[in-house]
Amino acid sequence: MGSFMGYVRPDGTVGARNYLLILSATIYANSVVERVANSLYGAIPITHPLGRSQTKSDLKMTFDILCGMGKNPNVGGVVVIVHFREELCNIHDIAHEISKTGKPVETVNIRAVGGAINAVAEATRKGMHIMRKLSTLTREKAEVSNFILGLNCGTSDTTSGLSSNVALGICSDRFIREGSRSILAELPELMGAEEWLASRAVSPEVVQKIYKAIQSYEERILATGEDIRGSQPTGDNIAGGISTIEEKSLGGAKKSGSAPIQDVIGYGERPGRVPGVYLMYTPGHGSESITGIAAAGAQVLVFSTGGGHTISHPIMPTIKITGNNTSYQLMQDTVDLDLSGILSGTMGIQEAADLIYNEVLEVLSGKMTKSEILKEMTGFAIHRIGISL
Image: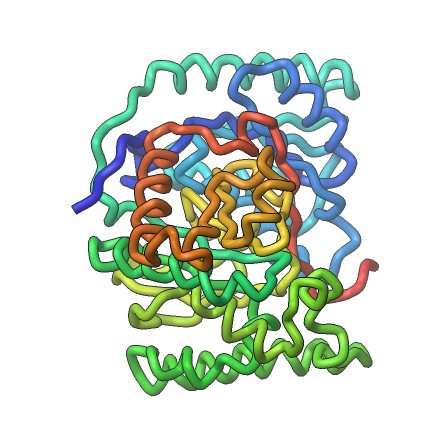
């Protein structure tokens, strides 16, 4: 049975990191957020172009995702910054929601304190006091039943569905047998795999949810006048030898293994407590997809890439794996694990799965990914439904 050394939070969740989050409530607080984060050890900035002039449904989604960032177990404390006042996405409601976890949360209003310079000073001071408390925390042994594994893939090629995704699926199955939960996302890239996914659903209700979610996403795409069957696979997928969306989907679904699918959950929604796979309603857009997974509480993401990919989430350590040796050689600064031995015959599929499993446990316990060391934080973006107002 696996275990890891993590930071136990007041709400009982266990973090793989002990970040101080500097969180922007709207686009107009982004520069202050960046300055504060640059001044504080262990601080992670979350900036974005949203938080105002959105439809109510999109404001709700932005609010939920920002709260989800603060609630993620990898975050120990939060400073929320806003430039004035927003409706439906204001800092007091964000701070109140995050504080339900028991974590320290502070707020700074740029207008209320006299502008950007004072706001930077006040937020820096508040963040420093939180970081002083966080620095006293030490890692404790935790069972993997406290772990939520994020699954994603990108720049897929023919090696993905034959090697790295399959190995990741076996790894996911092992974590689930030991009490963990896994999140599978990217609904538009599961079109054609519905029947296989539905065969693993725990109930007829979940079967219907799976079909309905994937169909719903395709209908949303068609409503824009676009047909995903004409735009997918993408150019890099085609260059990698993938010929149809169905072929891409069946390969992508493999990273969820063979464990039961417990439920279909909304974008950024936290999964239930029962071990298994949870299918999340996200787009195929990598940054939006993994941001939904992070908001749901996943501590570590394993990202499978055939052609090589630079994506990494700011608060969810991102382990990149590939089954393509050429891509690994070209992207050695970015990709953590080379699994190309699966197809060359020098590495068994179970051996590769064990390699991922052990890497995940080590990262959960503090080992840094390549992207963390290089401060590559390319993967934060909030999904949206409607147009800007």
